Length: 575
Figure 1: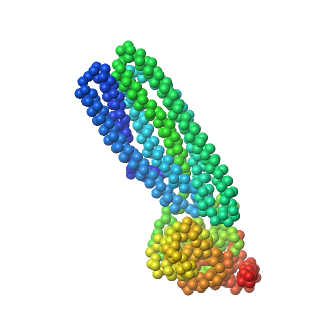
Figure 2: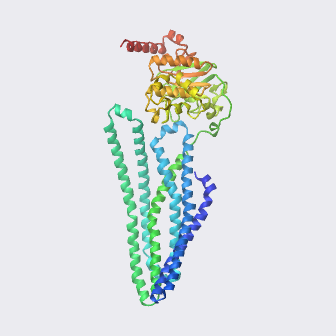
Figure 3: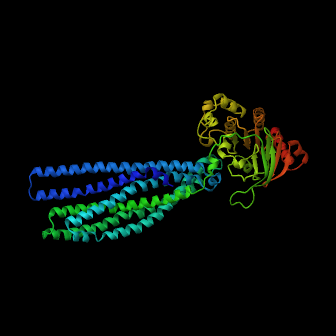
């Protein structure tokens, strides 16, 4: 997951760690200077001697500043760059994951990866690394000074309680890791709930479910609170335990150290320096609590991210644009497809041919496999080789990026971004204003835009919520038309517009799409009556096929559905 990053930037940790060690060593010189000052005061030395010691302390402070700035530059800045690298790679990875992945994972959970988990990993490779190296160096240098320069037995007795603190840290740290993981999981659930409710706010209000959803949210929020309280309560035990242990160390040092001073075994200056070193050991051990906490969070987040990065992306072949133009005409030969973990085929033995510039209509009951067929045509789901062809070329052998750049696909949901209508239609293409105007006109959107104060600069809102359902569909249609695609695929694109508007749009499309191969899925049969061939698909199989007139003569499911829709339309006009 981070192999490439460490290959490029890992060397920075070497000077960073060296500067950390050097900084810790320099800090251990301060107690010596303090002890020397006590000795000067004890011997009633002249002011010049004190000034000399003060200058030494000042130099030590400057050296600490320089080395601390250096290690922070190498370690902390590198960890920040790692954060950017991880987020960029995570975004790229998410973009290239197959569509079915998003059906198995909630958006709130994915947002938690990008926010909480990436930040926790950054902390682990930043401050945690720095704290570990600094703590170990400070403890080692301090104990070395205490043992070799002052009194080894005093050091041994004073540090006897310290293993108790370490045992407590290990035990409490394990509890922290379990509680931290649970808190992160509940954060994902809570984020997903909020995201889902914001996106579905209109539905919530339409069914007056605000209170019910608030109660569900409150329940999840309280569960998250309890998890956080348990996590923080466990973490809060660290400092008191460690400080209690070191209180015992100070008491031993005071009793035994005082005895050594009274018997002239060590000087008062050595005793003062010893207590300063003991204080320098306290803070690294106290920091073990924070280190353990952040380390456990970091490891848990690293594991979660690794599991996400282990999700298989689409093949590398499908990520490239081979520069080849796709030819007109579509052919399916005994096309069969089953979703992963499904118990039956979504499509079975589907065969058809669409001539260049022709139009194929696809109708049938909900869940029959119509949208699956369109997804296969644009490789949103991977087709099997030898079953689906475009211009005589196996779609399986056409890179997905190359295919989609030349196809105009309008899915059912008509998703729009929180940008202007103009930017949504242009959608990273090099379309001119004239081409945008023409696409909006052919999509039947010009009249609606003329009634808007901001015209084409009108913001669509998140997911297009500022527009009506029919307006969203027509802007999505214009976005596909502006690309002048070789193949146009419409998935029930005009379901939210009235029949009069639909007729006008279909008339415009008939003129515009002359020479363009198209596949149209529709529930309203008027959208496909001019198709060269219409497939009626039910339960993944073609049960009827033919032109509009031929299907009416068969007096089957298509004819019955057409009659039903005609009666409904007559009733609406009668009202």
